[in-house]
Amino acid sequence: MLLTITTTHRPATDLGYLLVKHPGRLQSFEVSGGTAHVFYPEAGEDRCTAALLLEADPAAARTAKGPDTFTLRQHVNDRPYAASSLLAVALGRVLRTALRGDSRDRPELAATPIPLELRIPALRCKGDAATFFEPLGWTVEAAPIPLDAAHPEWGPSRYVDLTLRGTMRLADALNHVYVLLPVLDDAKHYWVSSDEVEKLIRAGTGWLAEHPAKGVIARRYLAHRTSLTNEALSRLSDVDPDADSVIERAPRPESLAALRRAAVVRQLAEAGASRVLDLGCGPGALLGELIRDRRFTEIVGADVSTVSLEMAARRLRLDRLPDRQRARIRLLQTALTYRDDRLRGYDVAVLMEVVEHVDPSRLPALAASVFGHAAPRTVVVTTPNVEYNVRYPGLEHGRMRHHDHRFEWDRAQFGAWCDDVAARYGYTVTRHGIGEEDLEVGTSTQMAVFKK
Image (cartoon, rainbow, N blue to C red; front, top):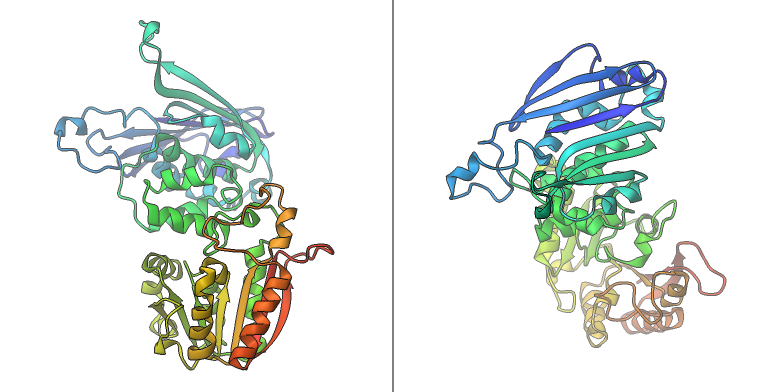
């Protein structure tokens, strides 16, 4: 299987510095599933082409589904010939420095968009390649390969000859291909574990979070494993429970979720908190912020979903933390509408984007559990401001920001709930906005800080 990379940037032979592979030498590398070769079919001042050729071992080139009971398939398959995750792995192994965007000899060029043409002559393609590459700035040519040139009536095969043309950093181009090769093939030759989420996030930095097909990309890249896909989408969207919310898809210099977390952490610092509860912690977005701040000596993440807690544990890499760090944090499975003695005695409790996921009829039980029974000195609550929804063009009138929201309050409704809870359980309350303020509809997120 073959990938060629061509540039007309002058001097074009500087491509060798970016790839850290000399144009005058053939280099070979043993990789998973075979041997990878890097060579240059052409290397001139005006045009230079580097080729990555993978000679795959048919017996090692299995599909992502694992060993097949029909053993002949180990030797008779398309893996040695059609670009797939095998080529992506070779790309990651052989061109690792270029994927990172590092260049000791040409650092300025590594950071500069240059004209590029990438070609993959044989790629198994499930769907339209343009759907995945065009949003990234590529001009896409995907020529169908006939099933049999001698029998045109048989129609095209499931393979295409793919050519991509665009002007961008070489690192960005390689990361696009690294992620999308197994996505277009919709298969992987190895077992997909939680480490693949880290690979996807790393390779997708700067482009995947805003990609219109990011859901399909994540699902295919992670071999349709639901828990890993949900974790990846949550981290890409930089939210916890609301990974598909309209807000997080809206481009902005700093995401609303990041602003929200920063505002919450500021309130915790102002309260002088050291022992913190993150109630409804989800996959652990806020927990990640808290564990990096040494002011917080005891951190508890609580959620009703064991799947979310497992995602949080992976996100925090709890199994890899030093013992001293690991001792600062606990994850608890619990329902916030029921009293739990384990949640008593903490300085601060946070309900960040949680209350709107609770049925209105259960809100009194949540208030009794958190404000009445757990009774921390400070409680920080954030929730969407429904008035702001009109500022999101992609959100239909009357539709809530997330499919799991049971309600969304306007500012007056939130204020009334806050005042009632504060009076009932002996707190004072102040309200704040998070995000850019609109003179007519306020801020996108509203926050209340309750103090005993």
